[in-house]
Length: 442
Image (cartoon, rainbow, N blue to C red):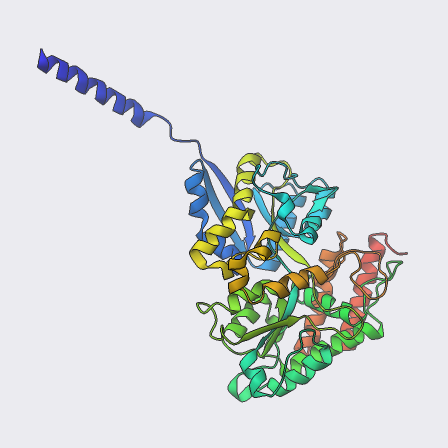
């Protein structure tokens, strides 16, 4: 009898095991995420297992691209309703334009603990339309001056907290030591509306220039633009690294980290990388100041955020919202802090971060980052009045194409294949043509 019972129990267990083995596994949703190859995004990819462990029904596939390529691929995909991506990494430029075209899903369901009110007001406003969030900021930035304190000390120089361009030009001459492979300044040179044009537009604002007058007439053939581009080209040719017309954010970051730049004017987000001993040979020799000015009341600082958004028509909205809430929420900040230290958390998005004593203690750049973001005014970006909003871009759909074309002309002036005057004339002509075609001017 006992043998029969054992056989029955064993058979039942075997049958149960067979049934379990043939049962379907958890239905999987795969999110394809397009993102930029910046350090904070690379770090996020390394931490994705935290999300997938908490959400075993979701797998994540990354498509990581260089900045200009990302913009092209993502813009083409959303404009043609290609459906290639479930989550897009896009900037403050695209969010309001695409939201108004109904290309983005409003982010109404990021969870009760997401705390939208904690987002920095300027960043939140930049990714909202009519009070609704259409993208969640992963990190926010302005621009500032980063410099080598040891080289300044050696040259007998003191960096002002609010430097002028005249000071920067003079200091670059004194700091350049080409025999030692040290260049007085590193600035973006590679063509692109989000690369060299971001820097040069912010720089032009400080010199009193503007892209368009109040009637949308392009303004490149003005003394202010000539002063901007001449200052930039002369400064880079005399005191910048060789091949600067091919250098974008990542290339200049590598140059600074390796000790080859005495000054670098670029995104505030770079600060955590250049002060991290894991990444930077000069981590303990870095100082920070505001982006330069020309005495006209505007600094060369921009306003930007890289954000995560969901394309309209997506069939994976719920899973995408879960990922976005994870990647841009307060718990992600704590995760990075636990793994990498507080100095390396994504900056520039949440008020609470700038009130966190643990962060302020290890991030010498924190207060200047916040001051730079606060100083940027997208609604009044220039000395003279303009019909557009946006600090380092004009927030019109045509700017993406115009900015890239103008960026190519300015990069050519830097490389020496064109002159400053020829580059400005070509920029004026190309921009006039496009603005006429788009119906802004006759």
